[in-house]
Amino acid sequence: MGFEVHRRLSVADAVTLVNAVVGFAAGAVAFADLHLAARLLLLSVIVDALDGIVARSSDSSEVGPLLDSITDVVSFGVTPSLFVYVLLTDAFGGIEAGAPLVFVGLVVVASLYAVLSVVRTAFYSTYFDAPDERPGMPNSLGAIVLATAYLAGVTDPVVVAAGVTLLAVAQVAPFDYPKPGVKTVGPMGVVLFGAVVAPTALGRAAPRLMLAIALLFFALGPRYYWLD
Image 1 (cartoon, rainbow, N blue to C red):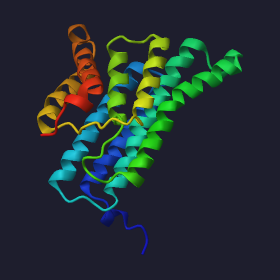
Image 2 (cartoon, helix red, strand yellow; image 1 turned 90 degrees about the horizontal axis):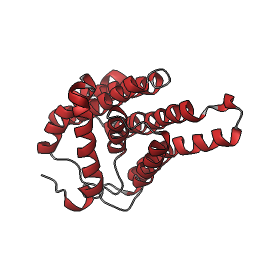
Image 3 (cartoon, rainbow, N blue to C red; image 1 turned 120 degrees about the horizontal axis):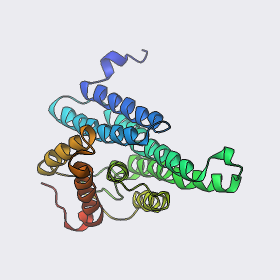
Image 4 (cartoon, rainbow, N blue to C red; image 1 turned 30 degrees about the horizontal axis):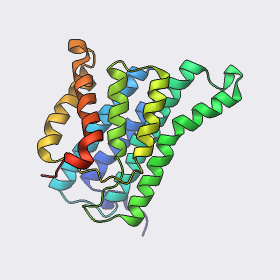
């Protein structure tokens, strides 16, 4: 029968694959420009939201949910880990610095987010299928916190390492995180877009506002946020 890619993929799947491209680009750019990589990471979040909108407004393919899960691991699991790896090795030195134990420690810290993102995705695919079962922080939320924090001026490597470790573990925490409703996604999208196109405007207003929103959702979402 063959793959029959053109027949088995929907428009929503095409948007999902664009998300994978943007996420990969963010990871690649991180090795040269962390500021641009953070903006691309936020752009990937926007594309992911568009993917959901397109999927709800048109027919979704059978392979769509799996493609979405895999792409989320790439864009919001692996890319944030690469981002943190570059930031930490820029500060403490990479393998060429001659301190192998330090390098191993940096790799462990940086890779933890990607590893637990993979674990979370695998558990969702195997154990959770009800719409009200949403344990653990979404990896996209962690990506937003990481990218907006950097654009807002939080660049201290120790602070970033501690923060990303907390975010990594939160992905497999036993707290149910609600899916943001339509009334929330719209305004958040506007602020996210501002952080992408003008991250330094008005004293870094957009990334700082988005960081505050993301942190509030991270801390209070499981208890105080309700679906529309």
